[in-house]
Image (cartoon, rainbow, N blue to C red; front, side, top):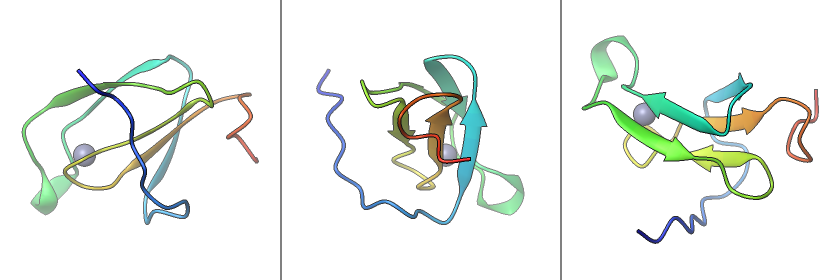
Length: 64
Ligand SMILES: [Zn+2]
């Protein structure tokens, strides 16, 4: 599976995570089928369904 994702930064939803494998089922009204993603080498992943942006805590993508 090609996991290359090319979404722009600054997606509407950011979630800080502590594992490189994450799941997303959307949120509330805008829910979607549960899917799993592996974070890329920068520690980021974006959900194809809801554009949620996952950021690995302490990674280069973590600006907090
Ligand atoms: Zn999602």
